[in-house]
Image (cartoon, rainbow, N blue to C red; front, side, top):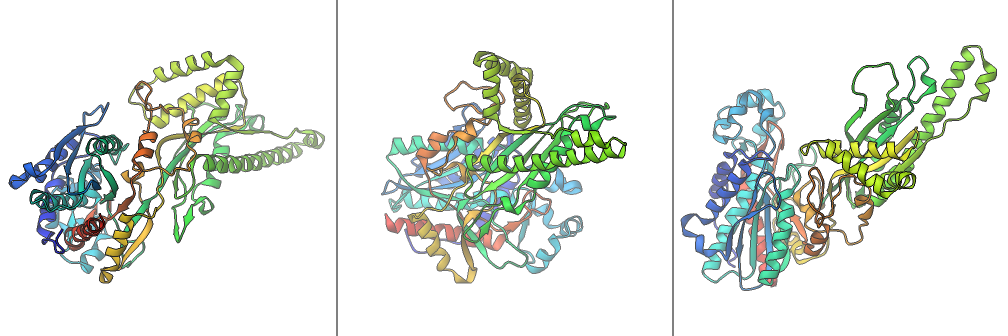
Length: 557
C-alpha cells in the first residue's frame, strides 16, 4: 500500500449526506434501503468487479426481512481486517418543528438560528467551529462513520484491482444497533462462514461509531481498544397485602422498592473502575407496582429494572453483589417498620403489646432459586406447563421486559412463597464488555495516534457507549450460566424459535474472538435534536487515520 492516500473530505461528506437522506429508523424497511444504497456506493464508477464478494446477507428469522450489506476484498494475505458500522438510527420526533428537515443537512444548515434557539447547547459549538458542523439525524450516530468505511473500502478496491492489496478486508453495514443488534449477531455468523470458506485469519475489527468530548472544552480526540458492557438486573418486589386502614398488617411493596432503588440507583459504589476509567452509575429504567387500578389495598407487588454498565463485572458476580445489598436493604426496611409499628401501638396506649410484636422477616432469592422452589412444590412438568401457558397468554410483540415479569410472577404464585421478598433476575438485553487485549490492531492504532501529536489523540480502553462491538468477542473467563439460568425469556440458539424469547450466539461469538477498536467520527448530540458531526475531523482526518492504521497492519503481514 502507498504511504499517501487521496483527499477524503468531499467523498465522505457526500456519502454522509446520501446516507442521512434515507430514513432508517430501527426497526423498519428503511434499513434495507440504506443497505442497498451502501452497495450502490461501493460499486459506482465501475468498481463492481473489484470485489471478491459483495451483496446482502439476510438476517436469520428477522420479522422485518432485513439484511446486512457486505463486501470482501481478497488481498495477497489471508490476514484480514473488518470494517464495521451500523446504518440504522433512532426516530426524528425530537426535532419538533424542524422534523421535516431532520434528514436534510443542507436544509438544517440554513436554519441554524432556529435550531440554536431550540437547542441552546449548539450555539457555543457554532461559535468555536463556524461552518464546520453537519447536522441531521444519523450525521454522527453513525452514518458519517459508515461513509468513512465506504470511502476506505473503495480506495482498497482500487488497489485490489491492481493486485496491490497486501491484506484482505471485509466491510459490513448492519441494521438494528439502536434496537437489539440483530445485524451484528448475523454478522458474527457471516464472518465465521467467510473465515471458513476463504481460509482467513482475522486481525480485528475497526468500528466507526461516534466519539465525543469527555468534559467541557476537552481538546482531545479518542480511540478505544475495548467497549463497555451492560446488564439489566430486574427485581420483583413482593410485600404483603393489607387494607390501608391497617397498614402495619402488611408491607407496602412500593416502599420496599423505593428502599432498594434508593440504595442502588445512582450509587457510585456500584461502578466498575479500571485504569483511570469509571463506568456511569446504575439507573432505573422502569419502576412500577403491579396494581391495575385504584383500590384501598396496599400494593403488595412491584418491580423495577436497573441499567448497569460494566467494565469487569460479569453476571454471576453482579448477581451476588446485588443479592447482598438487597438483603441489607430489606433488613433495614423491615427493622424500620418494626420500630414504626411499636411506636404506633404505644401511641395508641398499648405499651405491653408493643413490646411483644414479632419481628418481620424477609427473603432474597434468584430466579433460578424461585424456579427450584416451584419444582419442589409441584414438580418439573407442572412448572414447565404453567410457564408455557403464561408465555402464550401474551402477544408475540409484548416487550421482553414485560414478558419476563409475567413469567417471574407466575413462578412466584407456583412456589407458594410469601412476602416480603425480593426476586432477582435478568432481563434482556445483555451486552458483554470487551477488555483490551494486546494485538497487532491495537499496536497499529497506538502508533498512528502517536504519529499525530497535533490531534491530541488519546487511546482509551473502554468505549463508553453501548455498541455492536460487544458481540464480537467474549471474555473467556466469564461465567454466563448465571445469566442464562436467571433470564426467564432466554432461549438457547439451537432451540426452536419462540416469539418474545431472547437469544445470543454465545458459542459463535467465542469462536469469532475479534479484537476491536473504535475509531470513529467526532461530534455531539447523538440521539438529540442537535446531533452534529465535526466535518473537518469526521470527513477528512478520520478516514486518513483509518487508512494509516490499515497501512501499518499491512506492513506487518
